[in-house]
Length: 152
Image (cartoon, rainbow, N blue to C red; front, side):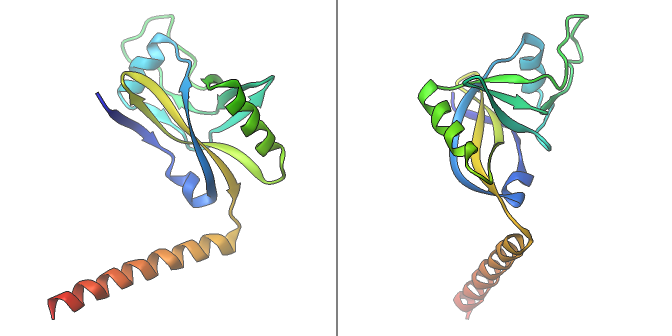
C-alpha cells in the first residue's frame, strides 16, 4: 500500500536542527481520521509533550469533518502518540537535557494507519539559520556551474 504524506512541518526544519527521527502511531477518533484523509491538518505551532510516560501531540489542528454530526471532534485537543515504552523513556531523557524538544515533522498514512514522524530537535539561533541558507545557495550555485560546464 505504501505511504501517503498528509502534511509536513516545513517550518520545523528551518527553525530547528533535527538530530533524530522516530515514527509514532497516533490515537484518533473516527471523524479525525476522515478529516486527516482529506488533508485538513496544520502542524505549524505543534510540539510533542511527555506526560507520565506517554507522548502527546499538542496544538496540532485537525479541522472538524465537514460531513460529521454533533459527535464531531475538538480541533485542537491533545492526541496521544503510540510508541514503545523504551523509546519514550529514551526520548524523555533526551528532552530533559537543556535545549532539546520534540517536534512533529510530518503526518502520513502507512498501510492505512495514521503515523507521525517525531524529531528530536535543538533550536537554531539566527547565525545557524543564516549558515543553512548560505550552504543551500552555495549548493544551488555549484549545481548550476556543473550544469553549464557540461553544456560547453
